[in-house]
Image 1: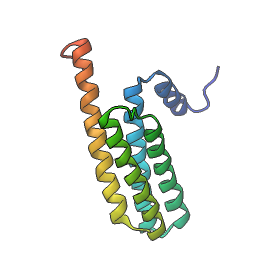
Image 2: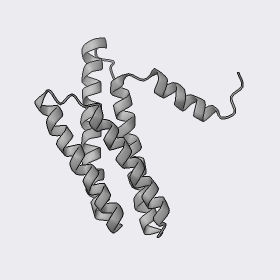
Image 3: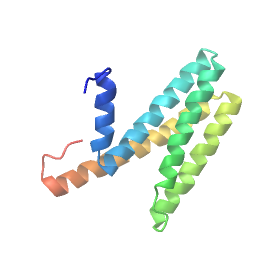
Length: 133
């Protein structure tokens, strides 16, 4: 099989072989990428690009919402936070408000960094001191 785009093949392989924890980390990073692109689009007065990127960020947050285990308290609390973030992104899109995007970006960074620590702790517990993400 010939590879037309080695980077795309690498990305597909990365997603296909990632653990559920690593997939969640990828979702957070993707959301941050789209939020950054939306801010740039607002600054450049590119309404369509802003809309496209904010919708992509919302879809990631919605994916995070449907994968939560809401039978535990922390899952229910996360669901409420994701719902809040999703609503704020709708508002940011309507108002073209960078400050709202930055608010959601800050929450996403906190969740991502916390999740990264959880992955590292699990690796250390399972594989010893060498478990770095």
